[in-house]
Image (tube, rainbow, N blue to C red; front, side, top):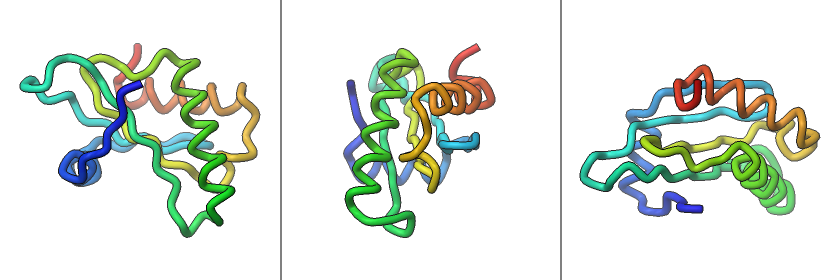
Length: 110
């Protein structure tokens, strides 16, 4: 899975991305730059204000699993998944439904 790690890419996503929120996750989506090719990338964010390291790591782990089940990363898009307080405790089915809803709202999948 290709992930977003460069600070300039992170800044461009947070500053110019289209946001879509669902119950367990918020997505920030930008089109993949043509100079980089069509391959999409993902980024997982769990802020410190939501809990300790154990909670944040669990939230990112369950989001990574949900992206794998949903077929991500998606060609043509760089996607940041931002955890919410309930993300770590969500069942896989609920998280998958929430991710699918946010992906459809943002136009990543049809």
